[in-house]
Length: 388
Length: 63
Image 1 (cartoon, rainbow over the protein chains, first blue to last red):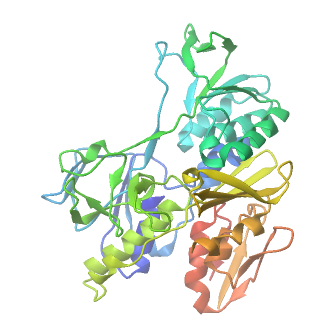
Image 2 (cartoon, chains in turn yellow, purple):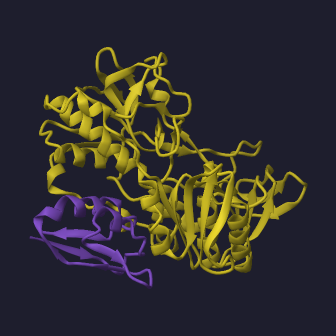
Image 3 (cartoon, chains in turn yellow, brown):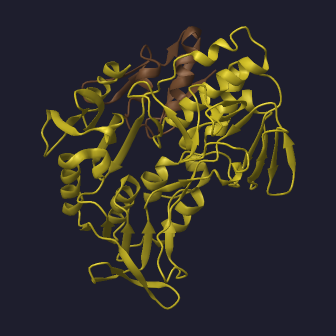
């Protein structure tokens, strides 16, 4: 998605030269969020989630089913998994994340799933049948969305989560415990402050051993325990790869000594940057709108640089402070949030009723750092002007 | 002029488009999306941004 959005934005900003996109997946870019929500509940297909192709990017050279395996910033080349070497004037690193997996002894058993790609969603969809025992490890947003979808499809769902409530880090105590109640009312069972000790089965999983000794019947195991940045291929270039890739406010990749590489950029889930809306601490933000926002920022700089526009290099100093946004659908609960709620040290009910639709404000000391609502979208939307 | 279409079978009323193109999109009192289907060319950049940020990819510009 970041690659596509960057290509589109490069054209919009006046770059007319060649653009090549190298992607590990064989599918053209598609919209990931529905994969754990309504698309998983219905029929999963590329058509259901594909981004519409635009005429401005019809001449982009797509190299799909092939991944970038190494980078040489001295010689401006990328080598792919087919052994081809590509020269670049400007490089955009948009290799995203892969799911973390749980580490257990019986790890070779079948019917373990993660959910990141379209192929993951297709494989999981087949397994979510009425009466199946589905165990989800990880009670973050992906885990909870899969729990809701699997429950709606008639499965028996247990969520094993390492914190005291699901989605605690983003929602805070009060809203997280409220969402837990709503899941439990639908039949989901939570095992909180728990982890997986081992998996049980001959060839396929039949059970999960929890760290308190309980054995759960299990036909389908879903691992939703976070993700890892795909940055290994950038090694040997002296790039700061400590949790994603460190970039400056122009999305330029930064060396370990803090200096930027002028023609190498990183965008999307792997870009770690400081957002002046909050503070000066560089962070990766895995929210929905970040690939689009960072792609546009990088493209504006690249287009100015490559077309030798008068706006370069002044454009490097332009403000970049995108407001993160995410949403989630779980049963009839529609959550919409802005900001970085996970930075907060307290949350306050601002509008509505905790048992129904409501809006919470999230504060770090006295700074408003986020807002999240169940329903009440117009009210949540009205907060955007408080950030920007 | 540009013509805008929103697939209301896809739209989940997240309202992300409202901030990109406030002259075109709005959430009504029931939190449902309403929009203006025909707009001046000067709105094109805003509407394109709205197309990009729509979580459901429900918005199209019909030339």
